[in-house]
Amino acid sequence: MAEASKDELLQLIKRFGAYLTFKFSSLFPTSLRNLNSRSVGAIAGFAVAIVFTWRMLRSPSGTQRRVQKRQSSASSSSGVNAQTAAAVVPSGFPSTSEDLRAQNAIDQFSHLEKPTLGQIVRRRLSEGRKVTCRLLGVILEESSPEELQKQATVRPSVLEVLLEIAKFCDLYLMERVLDDESEKKVLLALEEAGVFTSGGLVKDKVLFCSTENGRSSFVRQLEPDWHIETNTEVISQLARFIRYELLISPSKPERTAPNVFSSPSLEQFFGCV
Image (cartoon, rainbow, N blue to C red; front, side, top):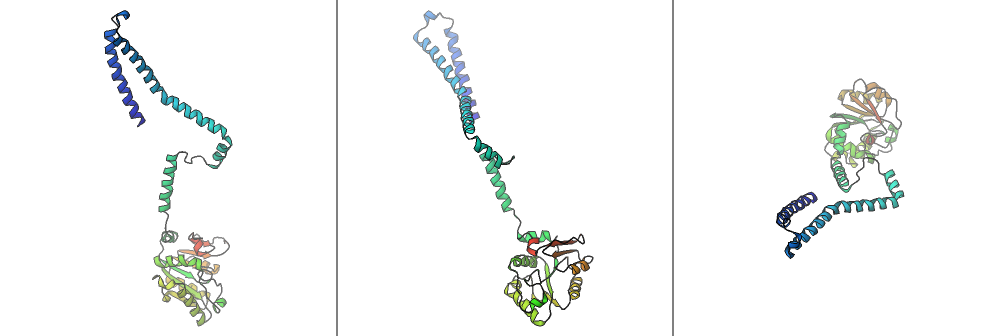
């Protein structure tokens, strides 16, 4: 807008100058003594126009210099604050209001494009569609079959991830138990947690056995894309038969095979903690 206004002003000055040139061409051949009041007024008007035009053209730069002078004065009087701000704001950070608005728009777009838990689950599982998972130490708070004789408790933090896996994958849960009562406790705990109401998991896909080898046999028969386990021996036995395995362990063990991953918990593997 400023450039357009300036161009219009210059065109106006050119037209005015052409008009004055025409007038002066008829004035200068005469002698100064013969100038009448109209001629003197025209000359005076021309002089005033020149001065006014010169000031108009000079004022933006002068104003700019005054603004720059005030900015430099303000920056020098708050040098400590400027140095502190420079230390806080890294290079490449937006420095103008336009840049800040653009950055905010990018941040909002990034926020809108944040992947959902379902998308994260599919990506982390490499689009695997069948998953087998041990219950003890992964889905349940308890860590041994002996504890299941007393109670079974679903870990609240794992529930959201478990339900998302059940929506996307053919999920089978399995565990070694010592008696039928333990089976009932496990199924009741899963039911009360709402695992069977999501539509992705049914009671028939919760399998029980009496030995560790029995769990390994279940896995090999089902041929899943992923098996989730806490027992390192079972992980080692199945590594050559299963495409991917996830070892749930509080400590990070040495990786035994390229297809074996580890995580402190199932929810942490999917970035939910």
